[in-house]
Amino acid sequence: MLGEVPAGARVVALGRTVKTAAPALAAYLRRERPAALYAHMFPLTWMAVVARMLPGTRVPLVLVEHIDFDAGFRAHPRSRALMRRLGRWIYPRADRRVCVSAGAADSLAALARIDRQSIDVVYNPVSLPAAPNAPTASNLADWWASAPVRLLAVGRLIAQKDYDTMLAAVAALPETMGAKLLILGDGPDRARLEGAIAAMGLGDRVRLGGFQPDREAYYARASVYVMSSRWEGLPTVLIEALIAGLPVVSTDCPSGPSEILDGGRVGTLVPMGDSKALAKAIVAAAAAEPDREMLRARGRDFDPPAAAKRYLALIGMGSDER
Image 1 (cartoon, rainbow, N blue to C red):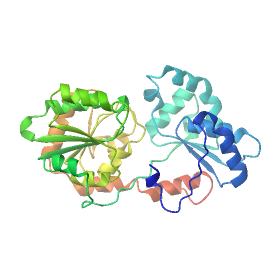
Image 2 (cartoon, one colour; image 1 turned 90 degrees about the horizontal axis):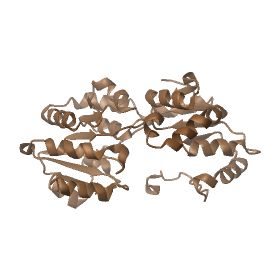
Image 3 (cartoon, rainbow, N blue to C red; image 1 turned 45 degrees about the horizontal axis):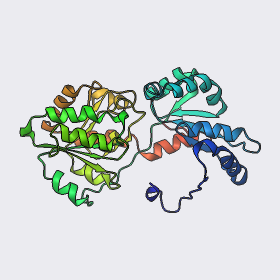
Image 4 (spheres, rainbow, N blue to C red; image 1 turned 180 degrees about the vertical axis):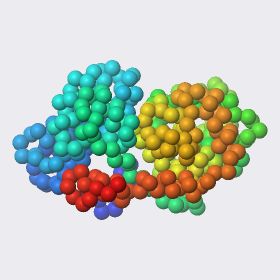
């Protein structure tokens, strides 16, 4: 994703794996003396704490976590045990602790056994260029854009996203809808999902489009955005869909969707793993006339300037205007 780094931004490559990067990061802190260090996402947050413990590295440190740890670590007992054993030691060593949703903050506090009041919540900054006329990959556009109902999902092809439930939901849709699902993203489950699509006879209704950098063009052409995740933190894709004025159907997973969709006021929430409920919600969303201005207004609540003010305020720069 280096191509998405803004022009003029400085990129420093530490040249190490995550496990061995702490000394290189410490050397950078000694040399550059930055105003603050914001470390995002475990295990980088823990590495930053280790680096800041080394001599000559005293800069304000803000740790930012992006997932619901309780749900995310359920299938990883070793990481869960490590968090329980060391979380209480690691997180208090930062100057500030942040999660990207209230649900993620509740989860971190419980799992790491730290005071919930010591964790700030700052929503991720999200923006989406208005580009309804941007080009899409022609092989996908020809197949998908002409469908009566165009379903869109964006995310890595991993177990967390539970695309199996999404495929089962598409299989349950009435064929008269003419719905086609396009999933943008790549990941280790690609071959398995391609096999599942073929086995379910969905080859003419579902495509895996790979990573597409111009996703705003797909949001602009979609009829309904669909998410079937088992857990999240604050799923950016839902906010991007709202900014584009796109109706959203999502599982009510921990955590983020309910916060983003205001408890279901600006989108439809369904139980996790329930393909029938997901299919029913997709049918209803496709048939309804969306209030696109309401959707866009909710999306604007996540404008980058608001998050920037909050992050600066955490280290005593600017005002904390919420």
